[in-house]
Image (cartoon, rainbow, N blue to C red; front, side, top):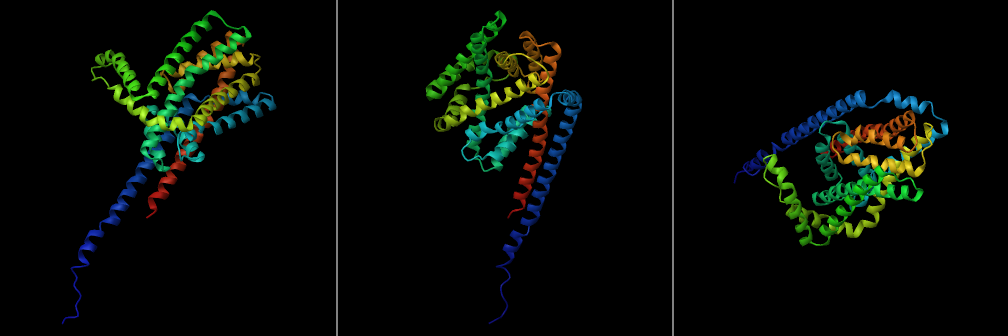
Amino acid sequence: MSDQKPAAASSPATSGAAPAKPAKRKNRALSITLATVATAAILFFVGRWFARSANLSQVWESIRTMPPEWAAALAASSVIYLLIFPLPYVAATIGLKYWPAFMMRQTAFTISMAVPGGGAIGLPVQYAMLSTFRITPQAAVTTVGIVSVGNLFMTLFMPVLGLVGLVIIGRVTASTIAGAAAGVAAVVVVSVLIGIILRSDSGAEKVGHLVTKLLAPVFRIIKKPPLDMSSRLVNFRNTVVGVLKVRWRWIIPAFFAVQFSWFAILYVAMRAVGGTVGFIETFAAFTFANLGLMVPITPGGLGTTDAALKALLQLYGASSEVAVAADLVWRGVYYIPQVLLGVICFLLWQVVLARRSVKP
Protein backbone atom coordinates (compact mmCIF):
# COMPACT_ATOMS: atom_id res chain seq x y z
CA MET A 1 0.00 0.00 0.00
CA SER A 2 1.45 3.40 -1.01
CA ASP A 3 2.06 6.14 1.58
CA GLN A 4 1.30 8.90 -0.91
CA LYS A 5 -1.76 11.07 -0.09
CA PRO A 6 -4.18 11.91 -2.89
CA ALA A 7 -3.67 15.45 -4.19
CA ALA A 8 -7.01 15.64 -5.96
CA ALA A 9 -8.91 16.28 -2.73
CA SER A 10 -7.12 19.53 -1.94
CA SER A 11 -6.66 20.77 -5.48
CA PRO A 12 -10.24 21.87 -6.20
CA ALA A 13 -10.48 23.68 -2.89
CA THR A 14 -7.22 25.43 -3.55
CA SER A 15 -8.12 26.38 -7.10
CA GLY A 16 -11.60 27.54 -6.04
CA ALA A 17 -10.38 29.66 -3.11
CA ALA A 18 -7.40 31.26 -4.83
CA PRO A 19 -9.33 33.99 -6.70
CA ALA A 20 -11.22 35.02 -3.54
CA LYS A 21 -8.52 37.25 -2.06
CA PRO A 22 -7.65 39.04 -5.33
CA ALA A 23 -11.37 39.59 -5.98
CA LYS A 24 -11.82 40.96 -2.47
CA ARG A 25 -8.81 43.25 -2.90
CA LYS A 26 -10.16 44.39 -6.26
CA ASN A 27 -13.59 45.22 -4.80
CA ARG A 28 -11.98 47.06 -1.91
CA ALA A 29 -9.76 49.05 -4.29
CA LEU A 30 -12.82 49.95 -6.38
CA SER A 31 -14.71 51.06 -3.26
CA ILE A 32 -11.78 53.21 -2.14
CA THR A 33 -11.49 54.76 -5.61
CA LEU A 34 -15.20 55.58 -5.79
CA ALA A 35 -15.15 57.00 -2.25
CA THR A 36 -12.13 59.15 -3.11
CA VAL A 37 -13.76 60.47 -6.28
CA ALA A 38 -17.03 61.19 -4.45
CA THR A 39 -15.21 62.97 -1.62
CA ALA A 40 -13.17 65.06 -4.06
CA ALA A 41 -16.35 66.02 -5.94
CA ILE A 42 -18.12 67.03 -2.71
CA LEU A 43 -15.15 69.13 -1.59
CA PHE A 44 -14.87 70.77 -5.02
CA PHE A 45 -18.52 71.75 -5.28
CA VAL A 46 -18.73 72.90 -1.66
CA GLY A 47 -15.61 75.01 -2.16
CA ARG A 48 -17.11 76.51 -5.30
CA TRP A 49 -20.38 77.17 -3.46
CA PHE A 50 -18.54 79.03 -0.70
CA ALA A 51 -16.65 81.10 -3.26
CA ARG A 52 -19.84 82.07 -5.10
CA SER A 53 -22.71 82.11 -2.64
CA ALA A 54 -21.67 82.08 0.99
CA ASN A 55 -21.18 85.85 1.53
CA LEU A 56 -18.78 84.99 4.32
CA SER A 57 -17.27 88.46 4.67
CA GLN A 58 -20.67 90.16 4.91
CA VAL A 59 -21.99 87.63 7.42
CA TRP A 60 -18.88 87.93 9.55
CA GLU A 61 -18.97 91.73 9.47
CA SER A 62 -22.60 91.73 10.64
CA ILE A 63 -21.80 89.31 13.48
CA ARG A 64 -18.62 91.15 14.47
CA THR A 65 -20.42 94.45 14.94
CA MET A 66 -23.43 93.15 16.91
CA PRO A 67 -23.60 93.29 20.74
CA PRO A 68 -21.83 90.32 22.40
CA GLU A 69 -24.99 89.11 24.13
CA TRP A 70 -26.81 88.91 20.79
CA ALA A 71 -23.85 87.17 19.16
CA ALA A 72 -23.95 84.59 21.97
CA ALA A 73 -27.71 84.16 21.56
CA LEU A 74 -27.22 83.71 17.83
CA ALA A 75 -24.58 81.02 18.38
CA ALA A 76 -26.80 79.24 20.91
CA SER A 77 -29.83 79.27 18.61
CA SER A 78 -27.72 77.90 15.76
CA VAL A 79 -26.38 75.04 17.89
CA ILE A 80 -29.87 74.17 19.15
CA TYR A 81 -31.19 74.09 15.58
CA LEU A 82 -28.35 71.86 14.41
CA LEU A 83 -29.03 69.43 17.27
CA ILE A 84 -32.78 69.36 16.58
CA PHE A 85 -32.46 69.10 12.79
CA PRO A 86 -32.05 65.25 12.64
CA LEU A 87 -34.95 64.48 15.01
CA PRO A 88 -37.58 63.76 12.30
CA TYR A 89 -35.36 60.95 11.00
CA VAL A 90 -34.87 59.52 14.49
CA ALA A 91 -38.62 59.68 15.14
CA ALA A 92 -39.58 58.14 11.79
CA THR A 93 -37.03 55.31 11.75
CA ILE A 94 -37.27 52.41 14.16
CA GLY A 95 -33.74 51.44 15.15
CA LEU A 96 -31.96 54.59 13.93
CA LYS A 97 -29.95 56.26 16.67
CA TYR A 98 -29.27 59.98 16.95
CA TRP A 99 -25.65 60.15 15.75
CA PRO A 100 -26.20 58.17 12.51
CA ALA A 101 -29.29 60.31 11.85
CA PHE A 102 -27.22 63.46 12.42
CA MET A 103 -24.57 62.28 9.95
CA MET A 104 -27.14 61.41 7.32
CA ARG A 105 -29.20 64.59 7.69
CA GLN A 106 -26.20 66.92 7.46
CA THR A 107 -24.65 65.02 4.55
CA ALA A 108 -27.91 65.10 2.61
CA PHE A 109 -28.27 68.84 3.32
CA THR A 110 -24.80 69.60 1.98
CA ILE A 111 -25.26 67.55 -1.17
CA SER A 112 -28.71 69.01 -1.84
CA MET A 113 -27.59 72.61 -1.33
CA ALA A 114 -24.03 72.74 -2.69
CA VAL A 115 -23.82 70.11 -5.44
CA PRO A 116 -25.46 70.63 -8.87
CA GLY A 117 -28.45 68.33 -9.13
CA GLY A 118 -28.01 67.66 -5.42
CA GLY A 119 -31.68 66.96 -4.82
CA ALA A 120 -31.53 63.92 -7.09
CA ILE A 121 -28.16 62.82 -5.70
CA GLY A 122 -29.05 63.32 -2.05
CA LEU A 123 -31.86 60.76 -2.09
CA PRO A 124 -29.76 57.71 -3.05
CA VAL A 125 -27.07 58.90 -0.63
CA GLN A 126 -29.66 58.83 2.16
CA TYR A 127 -30.66 55.29 1.21
CA ALA A 128 -27.00 54.23 1.13
CA MET A 129 -26.30 55.77 4.54
CA LEU A 130 -29.39 54.17 6.07
CA SER A 131 -28.19 50.84 4.72
CA THR A 132 -24.78 51.46 6.29
CA PHE A 133 -26.46 51.98 9.65
CA ARG A 134 -28.29 48.63 9.42
CA ILE A 135 -31.67 50.06 8.37
CA THR A 136 -33.53 47.73 6.01
CA PRO A 137 -34.51 48.96 2.51
CA GLN A 138 -38.20 48.84 3.46
CA ALA A 139 -37.61 50.93 6.58
CA ALA A 140 -35.48 53.37 4.56
CA VAL A 141 -38.29 53.89 2.05
CA THR A 142 -40.68 54.46 4.95
CA THR A 143 -38.37 57.04 6.52
CA VAL A 144 -37.85 59.03 3.32
CA GLY A 145 -41.58 58.92 2.57
CA ILE A 146 -42.60 60.18 6.01
CA VAL A 147 -39.96 62.91 6.09
CA SER A 148 -40.77 64.11 2.57
CA VAL A 149 -44.51 64.34 3.24
CA GLY A 150 -43.86 65.87 6.66
CA ASN A 151 -41.66 68.61 5.21
CA LEU A 152 -44.28 69.43 2.58
CA PHE A 153 -47.06 69.58 5.14
CA MET A 154 -45.07 71.82 7.50
CA THR A 155 -44.22 74.21 4.66
CA LEU A 156 -47.95 74.61 4.01
CA PHE A 157 -49.15 74.52 7.62
CA MET A 158 -46.78 77.03 9.21
CA PRO A 159 -48.21 80.00 7.24
CA VAL A 160 -51.61 79.18 8.74
CA LEU A 161 -50.11 79.66 12.21
CA GLY A 162 -48.54 82.88 10.99
CA LEU A 163 -51.92 84.13 9.77
CA VAL A 164 -53.59 83.22 13.06
CA GLY A 165 -50.94 85.22 14.89
CA LEU A 166 -51.49 88.26 12.66
CA VAL A 167 -55.25 88.06 13.18
CA ILE A 168 -54.77 87.99 16.96
CA ILE A 169 -52.65 91.17 16.97
CA GLY A 170 -54.68 92.89 14.23
CA ARG A 171 -51.91 93.11 11.63
CA VAL A 172 -53.70 91.39 8.74
CA THR A 173 -53.47 93.13 5.35
CA ALA A 174 -55.29 92.42 2.08
CA SER A 175 -52.18 90.90 0.50
CA THR A 176 -51.57 88.79 3.60
CA ILE A 177 -55.13 87.48 3.56
CA ALA A 178 -54.89 86.53 -0.12
CA GLY A 179 -51.61 84.67 0.31
CA ALA A 180 -52.61 83.02 3.56
CA ALA A 181 -55.99 81.98 2.17
CA ALA A 182 -54.17 80.13 -0.59
CA GLY A 183 -51.98 78.49 2.05
CA VAL A 184 -54.99 77.49 4.16
CA ALA A 185 -56.70 76.02 1.10
CA ALA A 186 -53.56 74.07 0.23
CA VAL A 187 -53.27 72.75 3.80
CA VAL A 188 -56.90 71.64 3.80
CA VAL A 189 -56.57 69.90 0.43
CA VAL A 190 -53.29 68.19 1.34
CA SER A 191 -54.63 67.16 4.76
CA VAL A 192 -57.78 65.66 3.27
CA LEU A 193 -55.83 63.80 0.58
CA ILE A 194 -53.31 62.45 3.08
CA GLY A 195 -56.15 61.37 5.37
CA ILE A 196 -57.88 59.53 2.51
CA ILE A 197 -54.62 57.87 1.47
CA LEU A 198 -53.80 56.67 4.98
CA ARG A 199 -57.33 55.51 5.78
CA SER A 200 -57.48 52.59 3.34
CA ASP A 201 -56.00 51.04 0.21
CA SER A 202 -59.14 51.91 -1.74
CA GLY A 203 -58.82 55.55 -0.68
CA ALA A 204 -55.18 55.63 -1.74
CA GLU A 205 -56.17 54.07 -5.07
CA LYS A 206 -58.87 56.70 -5.68
CA VAL A 207 -56.51 59.58 -4.90
CA GLY A 208 -53.89 58.00 -7.14
CA HIS A 209 -56.38 57.73 -9.98
CA LEU A 210 -57.23 61.43 -9.57
CA VAL A 211 -53.55 62.44 -9.52
CA THR A 212 -52.88 60.31 -12.60
CA LYS A 213 -55.62 62.17 -14.48
CA LEU A 214 -54.32 65.57 -13.35
CA LEU A 215 -50.78 64.74 -14.44
CA ALA A 216 -51.76 63.18 -17.77
CA PRO A 217 -51.57 66.48 -19.76
CA VAL A 218 -48.06 67.11 -18.42
CA PHE A 219 -46.86 63.71 -19.59
CA ARG A 220 -48.47 64.25 -22.98
CA ILE A 221 -46.56 67.50 -23.37
CA ILE A 222 -43.23 65.89 -22.51
CA LYS A 223 -44.16 62.80 -24.58
CA LYS A 224 -43.75 60.32 -21.75
CA PRO A 225 -46.08 57.51 -20.66
CA PRO A 226 -48.20 58.53 -17.64
CA LEU A 227 -47.28 57.24 -14.21
CA ASP A 228 -49.62 54.84 -12.44
CA MET A 229 -50.06 56.87 -9.26
CA SER A 230 -52.72 54.51 -7.88
CA SER A 231 -50.30 51.65 -7.29
CA ARG A 232 -47.62 54.07 -6.09
CA LEU A 233 -49.87 55.62 -3.45
CA VAL A 234 -51.15 52.23 -2.31
CA ASN A 235 -47.55 51.11 -1.87
CA PHE A 236 -46.76 54.36 -0.06
CA ARG A 237 -49.67 53.82 2.32
CA ASN A 238 -48.69 50.25 3.07
CA THR A 239 -45.14 51.42 3.67
CA VAL A 240 -45.75 54.26 6.13
CA VAL A 241 -49.06 53.57 7.88
CA GLY A 242 -47.65 51.08 10.38
CA VAL A 243 -44.87 53.42 11.51
CA LEU A 244 -47.21 56.42 11.72
CA LYS A 245 -49.63 54.52 13.98
CA VAL A 246 -46.84 53.65 16.39
CA ARG A 247 -44.62 56.75 16.29
CA TRP A 248 -46.80 59.73 15.40
CA ARG A 249 -46.42 61.09 18.96
CA TRP A 250 -42.70 61.58 18.29
CA ILE A 251 -42.84 62.42 14.59
CA ILE A 252 -45.18 65.43 14.82
CA PRO A 253 -43.31 67.23 17.66
CA ALA A 254 -40.01 66.59 15.87
CA PHE A 255 -41.18 68.44 12.75
CA PHE A 256 -42.51 71.37 14.78
CA ALA A 257 -39.28 71.54 16.79
CA VAL A 258 -37.26 71.88 13.58
CA GLN A 259 -39.48 74.68 12.29
CA PHE A 260 -39.51 76.71 15.52
CA SER A 261 -35.78 76.33 16.14
CA TRP A 262 -35.16 77.45 12.55
CA PHE A 263 -37.36 80.50 13.11
CA ALA A 264 -35.57 81.27 16.39
CA ILE A 265 -32.36 81.90 14.44
CA LEU A 266 -34.14 84.46 12.26
CA TYR A 267 -35.74 86.26 15.20
CA VAL A 268 -32.44 86.48 17.09
CA ALA A 269 -30.66 87.62 13.91
CA MET A 270 -33.25 90.33 13.31
CA ARG A 271 -32.95 91.67 16.87
CA ALA A 272 -29.17 91.34 16.82
CA VAL A 273 -28.82 93.67 13.81
CA GLY A 274 -31.06 96.28 15.40
CA GLY A 275 -34.48 95.27 14.09
CA THR A 276 -37.61 95.98 16.12
CA VAL A 277 -40.19 93.96 14.18
CA GLY A 278 -42.45 92.08 16.59
CA PHE A 279 -42.20 88.37 17.33
CA ILE A 280 -45.46 87.44 15.59
CA GLU A 281 -44.79 89.63 12.54
CA THR A 282 -41.33 88.10 12.16
CA PHE A 283 -42.81 84.62 12.52
CA ALA A 284 -45.44 85.38 9.86
CA ALA A 285 -42.77 86.73 7.50
CA PHE A 286 -40.70 83.59 8.07
CA THR A 287 -43.58 81.20 7.38
CA PHE A 288 -44.88 83.05 4.31
CA ALA A 289 -41.39 83.41 2.80
CA ASN A 290 -40.71 79.69 3.20
CA LEU A 291 -43.52 78.93 0.78
CA GLY A 292 -40.81 79.79 -1.75
CA LEU A 293 -39.23 76.43 -0.91
CA MET A 294 -41.99 74.84 -2.99
CA VAL A 295 -40.70 76.61 -6.11
CA PRO A 296 -37.61 74.56 -7.03
CA ILE A 297 -35.70 77.34 -8.80
CA THR A 298 -32.68 77.29 -6.49
CA PRO A 299 -31.51 74.82 -3.80
CA GLY A 300 -33.13 75.54 -0.46
CA GLY A 301 -34.98 78.53 -1.88
CA LEU A 302 -31.70 80.45 -2.00
CA GLY A 303 -32.58 83.87 -3.41
CA THR A 304 -36.33 83.36 -3.84
CA THR A 305 -37.06 82.80 -0.16
CA ASP A 306 -34.62 85.54 0.80
CA ALA A 307 -36.27 88.10 -1.49
CA ALA A 308 -39.70 87.31 -0.06
CA LEU A 309 -38.41 87.41 3.52
CA LYS A 310 -36.77 90.81 3.09
CA ALA A 311 -39.90 92.25 1.48
CA LEU A 312 -42.13 90.91 4.25
CA LEU A 313 -39.89 92.19 7.04
CA GLN A 314 -40.01 95.63 5.44
CA LEU A 315 -43.79 95.33 5.16
CA TYR A 316 -43.95 94.84 8.93
CA GLY A 317 -41.72 97.81 9.73
CA ALA A 318 -38.07 96.88 9.23
CA SER A 319 -35.84 99.23 7.29
CA SER A 320 -34.27 97.97 4.09
CA GLU A 321 -30.84 97.77 5.76
CA VAL A 322 -32.16 95.79 8.74
CA ALA A 323 -34.15 93.40 6.53
CA VAL A 324 -31.12 92.69 4.34
CA ALA A 325 -28.80 92.24 7.33
CA ALA A 326 -31.25 89.99 9.20
CA ASP A 327 -31.74 87.76 6.17
CA LEU A 328 -28.00 87.61 5.52
CA VAL A 329 -27.15 86.65 9.09
CA TRP A 330 -30.04 84.15 9.33
CA ARG A 331 -29.06 82.46 6.09
CA GLY A 332 -25.37 82.45 6.96
CA VAL A 333 -25.75 81.19 10.52
CA TYR A 334 -27.98 78.22 9.72
CA TYR A 335 -26.74 77.50 6.20
CA ILE A 336 -22.95 77.73 6.35
CA PRO A 337 -22.41 75.57 9.49
CA GLN A 338 -24.66 72.88 8.05
CA VAL A 339 -22.76 72.76 4.78
CA LEU A 340 -19.46 72.44 6.65
CA LEU A 341 -20.87 69.81 9.01
CA GLY A 342 -22.21 67.92 6.02
CA VAL A 343 -18.73 67.67 4.53
CA ILE A 344 -17.35 66.39 7.84
CA CYS A 345 -20.19 63.88 8.20
CA PHE A 346 -19.68 62.65 4.64
CA LEU A 347 -15.99 62.05 5.39
CA LEU A 348 -16.86 60.25 8.63
CA TRP A 349 -19.30 58.08 6.71
CA GLN A 350 -16.49 57.12 4.33
CA VAL A 351 -14.42 56.11 7.35
CA VAL A 352 -17.28 53.91 8.58
CA LEU A 353 -17.53 52.27 5.15
CA ALA A 354 -13.77 51.73 4.98
CA ARG A 355 -13.68 50.08 8.40
CA ARG A 356 -16.49 47.74 7.51
CA SER A 357 -14.87 46.81 4.20
CA VAL A 358 -11.77 45.46 5.97
CA LYS A 359 -13.75 43.29 8.38
CA PRO A 360 -13.80 39.60 7.41
